[in-house]
Length: 452
Image (tube, rainbow, N blue to C red; front, side, top):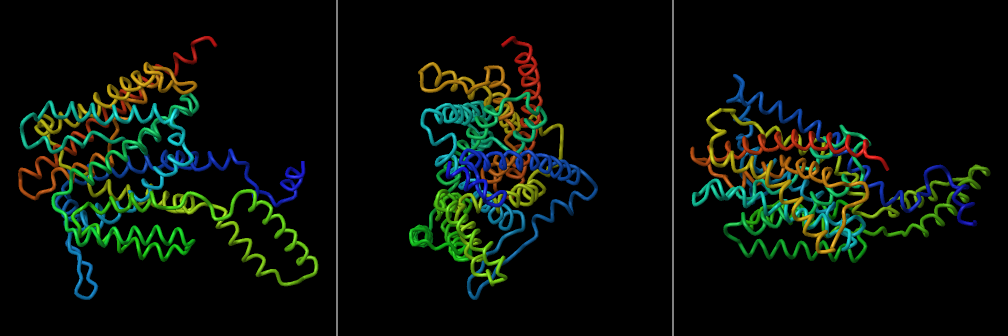
């Protein structure tokens, strides 16, 4: 009763029930992703239209603009599309991915091994089966380098599509797909680190390792100044870039190193804020200075939120509404030719996404449930799971990113493979969206029509 009375005496919005604190990041994430999916779709259409317009040469050439960053005798050279967007801005995207992975491991569905089994099995099936189907098409040819393209799910498009169904789709299915996407994002990161790394510069890799050790030491020491971590993070990014490992891997690792617990616990924060609020109210009545007290309240509020949640809240909108749309503009543009649809890579990627994803997800979920390792979430039926599995075949952002790593040369042959991979990604994602939407619509109507 005492806690309840204190809660009622506090100013509105200060005390937050634990369950709301746990669900708030997920709800916020899903809301942003739903809106981001619309922006991504618009940017994709704009990119495709411009790439097939009279201004195609200028538009596609924009991303080839040479850029150089120089600091004394040190310099980084590249073009706008690769160095700035795919290597630079996407490192921030992968940093947020690292934050999301850690959040799910610490306080989400992946925290409980029993609950994590279903999305983990689903993600494994959703990665392995698309790769197997891909390899069937260009068997024995150099085109096999693209086997990882159809492995990852684009959660922004998936959540945006699910939002169209409103409450007809159970929230538990959205959580399952979110957890699945996070697991296969982790799989994609591992593939980027271990498959798409040709040669290693061990001296730069050692410097990067020292940077990670410094970051961890700063966390242990309680350093909370974001500027310090930005400087160290930039240094790590440069070291990883120079080492030969793709620099986006540095973003994920830094995200995983971000502390997930607040400096001030919930109970301590509540009691301290209540006491400080009483002091401020007393000083207001006597017209005394209370600036120092307000500074302390500001500090307590800031440190009552974990660095992980604070950074995710701050960066996620920028990633969703700036970085990913810019990436789509730079990477989705491809001349659409009917002949490209018959390319083995196009067919392989499209089939991997549209067929491999739902097949692998449903079959591996069935295996997990048959072994007694998991069960379907409340409200999720097999038809709904199949519809969600089809939607998981929307693999836009990560698929395009891996496509650029798999076919990265500037020769006519490599450019043809790049274009084929992009067309296959767009086609497979479109088919997945149509199939997933149709199956979910049928499953939702059937669920409503079934007597309780």
